[in-house]
Image 1 (cartoon, helix red, strand yellow):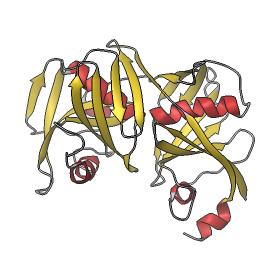
Image 2 (cartoon, rainbow, N blue to C red):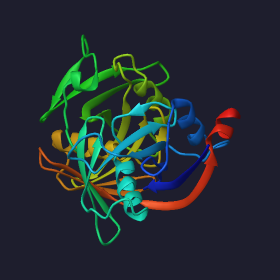
Image 3 (cartoon, rainbow, N blue to C red):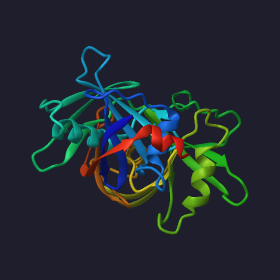
Amino acid sequence: MIWNFTKMHGAGNDFVVLDGVRQSIELTPVRARALADRHFGVGADQILLVENPLHPDADFRYRIFNADGGEVEHCGNGARCFVRFVHEQGLSRRNPLRAEISTGLIVLHEADDGQVSADMGRTAFTPPDLAFDPAGLDTRGCSEDTLYRLDLPPEAGEVWCSLVAISNPHAVVQVDDVDTHPVARQGPAIESHPRFAQRVNAGFMQVIDRRHIRLRVYERGAGETLACGTGACAAAVAGIRRGLLDSPVRVDTRGGALQIDWDGQVLRMQGPATTVFHGQIDIDALTATL
């Protein structure tokens, strides 16, 4: 079966985008892993699938599959690429668009300058919101936030993290320098920590000033990516709640800059969305090789 696809990225966080409106797409975990494979497939951090909506108030349904094949709740950089894809492909001229994700509706708008803004939806901070078990852990208050101490394997040490759920779960750690911090050791240990029943995205935030941070994110099911939209939102929100930051916050990732606005209720992200190329792939032949 031949599938048409588009390769896109948002600040270096890259995606294979599939049109499930005009072609029949049955995206299984095996097929998602095959498409995401950087040696034998197209290569991507996530696979995005655009479908007709199930919700009566949505324009489209937007689904996200990580490189490991697992379907997840949200992807901010992917949401911006979703809007650009829908407009470029002529699927809709509506602007803003209302997209249905697994946890509700998000609103997205493409500006004349090419930037895309996204209303990121629900934000929450309690352990149940992240399927997190806090029993027996040391905690400390930090302005409006609560930090939890996680013990990691001996080679990774320990961390104090904020909990932020933006449809998907994030643990945010403040570090002195994102370039020298041992993200490669701590990221996987946090992501798969047994306290998180559904795993977690691990963010490492360096505060530059009250409106500027640098960020690296080890994403659940994808590893470290060049940018993470929901991770940028989680870091900015955590920094504001800790009393370290003021909105709006510029978030510099390794793939580019994002802007996060949060007033305690409404959370918005703005950043780029770029089309790289279009192609076709025989999905059955691809999966047969892996």
